Length: 205
Image 1: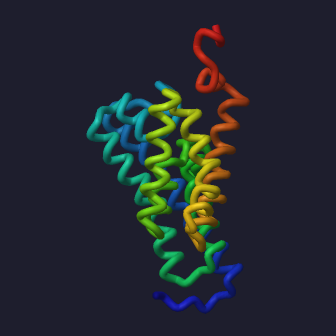
Image 2 (image 1 turned 120 degrees about the vertical axis):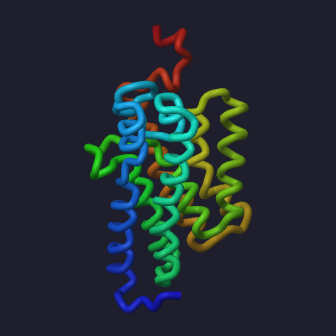
């Protein structure tokens, strides 16, 4: 483990900034533009996500984007863990990476939804927590047949599920902080221009 010589509060701020910058790398935007010459945020779901990349640029580029989006959540949290940050500091680092993905500095603050980056952050700390989150997301998506609803519910449920399972420390903080970011991201979409993600299309006219 790396030796942390800075005060935990300032160390958490430093790693959170690094997490945000890592999350701000808009791989979906860059790769889709390079492959198809289009801005992934202006077509399909208008989100810089793995799913929309697959729709616009194909399966291969989408897989690459998914791996890179997971990695940009994994790396800052891994280094924060190695530096010996307290559990809440690791949680803040993860949340900052997710926020960077959702509102990227390098792409006009218009990015993705944060799910893959959250998964990468969880994977850096506890593979079981990652698998539980993934299983819940898949189950809700299949049950509700509605990806947006499934995603926001998963984000809200992460921390309570981890608590019930006895998972404490960084995982619980990450579930709370990153889950809140995901919920806020989807709520903003709902309030602005993506109400069709929540309502049946027949009801939206």
